[in-house]
Amino acid sequence: MTWILRKEYIVTLALALGMVAGCNPGYTLAGESGGPATHSGSVYDFTLNDVDGKPLPLSQFRGKVLLLVNTASFCGNTPQYEQLQTMYERYEARGLEILAFPANNFGQQEPGTNEEIKKFCYTKYSLTFPLFSKISVKGDDKHPLYRYLTERSPFPGEVEWNFQKYLVDRTGHIIARYHHRTKPLSDEVVQDVEHTLATN
Image (cartoon, rainbow, N blue to C red; front, side):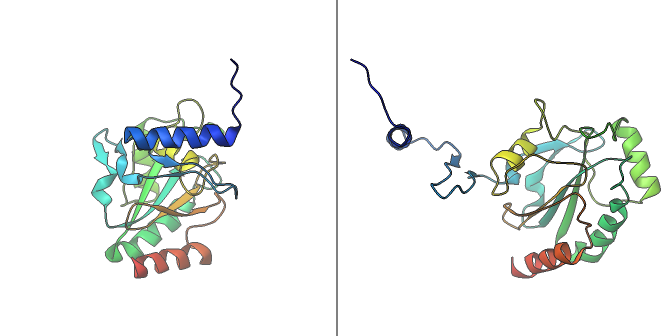
């Protein structure tokens, strides 16, 4: 006998079997409205190496408001480092952390070693917010954090260029994404950061 199942029946059956087995797949399927699939976890699920190669669990930042940024040293957007540092100095005491993830995915604009990246950022921009080891934010070797951000967060879609930003509330959930050309001290970002700091 040949069985032909419609797509909705397959989805219903899969969900039912998951409930029977007591399994949680870790995400929910997009609804009929076309809304994005969302991950049931948070950024706290991930651990990355800092720029010195030491493991740094993002759960360490639990309770903080986070701005996640993929960065590069030789990009037209690199001067955004200055505004990121200004923002950090302005809001750190209220609970903001800025996490920078160097990546060489766009235009080969982050070709250096972690040590070279660290020296550049600390010397030229006097950064004091956390800087991580170089990762990939796109392609087959995309880091699991960015796989979550681009595929399972409420704002799915590939990172388009250096200095794309994600705003994370104090519970570890993504609440906004900003274009790489949107500067950190733009009205849009500042208003969102201040609102998140005040309401969480």
